[in-house]
Length: 346
Ligand SMILES: Nc1ncnc2c1ncn2[C@@H]1O[C@H](COP(=O)(O)OP(=O)(O)O)[C@@H](O)[C@H]1O
Ligand SMILES: [Mg+2]
Image (cartoon, rainbow, N blue to C red; front, top):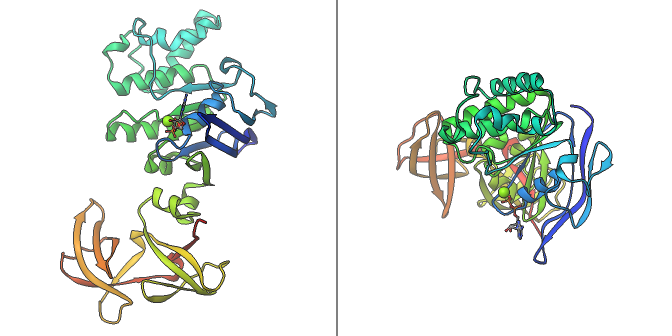
């Protein structure tokens, strides 16, 4: 990964007396694919718009290449933005839509020809130059919007839920294409989504946000496996959460049992949140198991089965490759390193 390219220092944005982005600190490296992830209303778009120059922070600094850009308008920043609602020019064809920015900047005609052709190839629309944009599907229009941004060869590309309107199949193939494009062009991507799977698939780094605050910054692997709190654990992937008590080092109590664990750094008798991912349970015979209960549902998910059981009134989700019928009484075991403990939010 390259050097630090963008930095947000204590950035705050207030609307109607509410800090919708509240004192966030973040840096983004050259060529990094960073995703802002969080539920609707958590401040993702506002953060992106401040980086792009469409909103001004009320406090803090936005630094690009070592220069504070707070007062620079969007067109003076090395940034291009693809908005959630891409506004193509309906009266222009695909080529002219993509060429628009270059013409404005008085780029020579033959260079425009080369660059637009290249950009359309990049978004898999090489033969669409003369088509009317109004005759394209939603997915194709979105690709034109992306081509229109990359043709400017920005150092930084901001994308606000660019695939949200597409159906699942197209969304998945576009995820792959965008990721490829980013690798090939060496552009820094700042990507906004509320879709955790999309974030996990595409990103080098995920920034999990909630109510204007950053909850956690990390790699997809790190965030999935070591969520910092209950919110992140719940938001990323599926999880089973239990109220627990830290008994002593390497020992935690939950669901009426004591379990070996590997997490350290909690006080004796401290309340902890315990998370166990559905795929980390092992099904064992019910006799002698610390947890046992009947299977209450069984859904085939294509690769695995999603089983539910209810034990002491608590529903537990299990992902397994083995099929177990509803009604079967199973026992559950979990390896010590698959038990993850988190601080309880104050
Ligand atoms: N121009 C605005 N005026 C007032 N409130 C706004 C404005 N833009 C966003 N908000 C509010 O700020 C919060 C964060 O919005 P936004 O950044 O769009 O969230 P996200 O993109 O994560 O869904 C929301 O509560 C939203 O209603
Ligand atoms: Mg948004």
